Amino acid sequence: MVIKLRKYFRWFIILVLSLPTASCRRPGNATTAFYYWKTAFILNKQQAALLKQTGNNAYIRFFDVSWNDKEQRSYPNAVVQLNEFPVGLNITPVIYITNKTFENTADTAVAALAGHCNKLINELSAEKKISYTKVQVDCDWSLSTRDKYFSFLKAFKKLNQKRLEATIRLHQVKFKERTGIPPVDAGVLMFYNMGKLNADLQQPNSIYNEDDAGKYIVYLGSYPLKLDIALPLFSWAIHIREGRVIQVYGKIRRRQLTDQVHFEPIEGQADYRAKTSFFLDGIYIKQNDIFKLEETDSNTLNAAAQQLTQHLPKQKHTTIIYYELANIDLSKFNEETITQISARF
Image 1: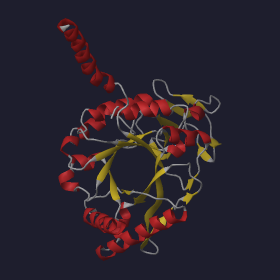
Image 2: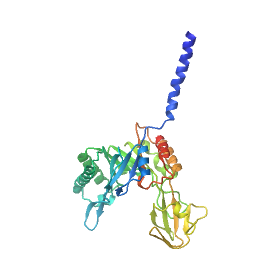
Image 3: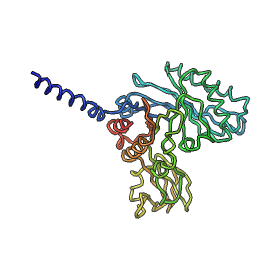
Image 4: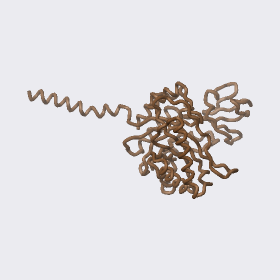
């Protein structure tokens, strides 16, 4: 009898010890969300399905705040048109404020600006009966605007009374003593747009590359603010003419550039040269113009996630926000791909 009990006990111990290993193979507890940045909220069937499959969480840009030089005042720009929403959609309003706005706004007018922003968010939410629990503010502040921006955040939080988030760039993590820590409940690390747009075809991808990220990411462990993560889903083509960058186009992708009638590949590069002058979707392209293609795919996201998880402090919960749903290439990213990336956190 004792021998049998020992035998069962041994198998019980093996079973218990195996549970943590099995659980490690399950998806992580990170929440998946998407940014939506267009001025009209309209989803196609595939976008709506992806949103539902991954948790129905959307960070919708409600409006920008820009500075009008002629009228010498700030004003709301590109206010979103909110149409029908999928059932059960969890919406977080996002506002983007240009740094120029704070450069030109008087210290005494910052609280009023916060009041105007809070009022517009609530008006847009009330119109569509949106119940939100947090607000995200996106601003790439500078040393000269830091105090005014932080004052804005404090004034907005006092009025809005919801959880407040602020976007954080990598340089603001590394140089936190100079740039300061925004007075918010949480930050969102924008883990993309790391390098400068460059006409040099030998330069690495400016959306994400491991070397540029490595110069900053080692400082994550000492950053005192809880950080969620924003990852890129987008690709773009850098339009180069006579050695100078003249524009960046998100709507020009490999499909257009592999049109052999108008383009030829540059040997040894993922870039293309125009064979003739012509118009592409209303864009004038001159003969010999070069398009430097910078893409994001599942390999890019896996590399970014692996690098992040090596340095991101352990925390109970992380939200992974993908930029962005309106222009997602559904041939590259689906529910399985996104879920697997989020599970790494």
